[in-house]
Image (cartoon, rainbow, N blue to C red; front, side):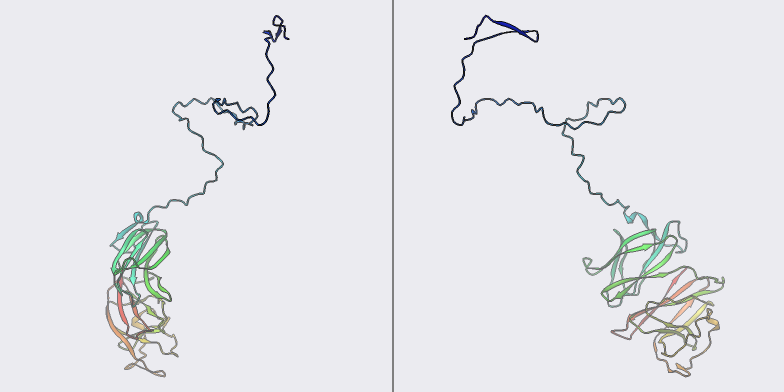
Amino acid sequence: MYDASRIYRQNNITIQDIPTNPLPPMMGNPQPDNNIPAIPVPEENIPVTPLPPIVGNPQPDNNIPTTPVPEENIPITPLPPIMEEPENNIQNFHSSPNNNSAGFSTIRFLHAASGYGSVHVSIGLKNVATDLSFTNVSNYYQIQDGFYIVTITSAANPGIVLFRGRIPFNTNETITLAIIRATNGLSILRISDQLCQNRPKNRGCLRAVNLIYNSPAMDVVLTDGRIAFSDIRYKEVTSYKQARPGKYEYYIAQTPYTLSGNTSNIDILDNLPVVLTNFFLPGYGTVTPLVSSSIEIRANMMYTIYMFGNWETSSELIVKSIESR
């Protein structure tokens, strides 16, 4: 029995003993009472990560929403840098192609892929040539230097991609990008259009390029018998030669297998020796012209004789002279 009148003090608090009846012992597994409200117990033993010391006197921000803080240790995959859209760096260029702006390249496209129809050409998302047909050349464009994706699609079916590749463009260069046949589709051949060196004011410049797919070496022969350019292989670009203003008639012939390149060091057409008579080359036999044409050369201008075709399917060739300043 408890003495209800006994009172004692603990921590300066007066406590009076109140008699209580002992509870009976618990039998079996007690069932939970779902009607008893669960009182949350504070988690006293959960370790708390210490915060870093606060530097300075931070001001409270009452506008910060009370939302959960994201996990700071989640790894983030870095995104590639955002490049400026190339169409912002391309502009049509109708004046002299040699007046390059600092940091820009001057370019144009030439369709030299025999057997392919007209094509569309784009740099990045910018269309720079529409319905460009075989043997034709586009306008010049200026593009900021760097690497850009060049895409060539069929004009008849724009959904068909014929070529896509990353092409470098260098500061202050002037180039023709020739679209040519390749083993598995199309390819791009870079042809420099820089000025010919040491050109007198009263002279023009002439060179030749062989774009006849898989052809043997070719010669450019003037109709009076002088060999202007000799042994031009597929995808080869000759050096410039000076020429007086005037009209020149010439033909293209296959290079004789034993012809030496004795004329390669002559850079003025006027000084070329006469080596052919009625298409007969002494010591080598008859040279058969494949195609003939003519060119009107003006002073202070540059010209390129382009040879087009597919030697695997036909020996019929196309020759075209293209002018550049």
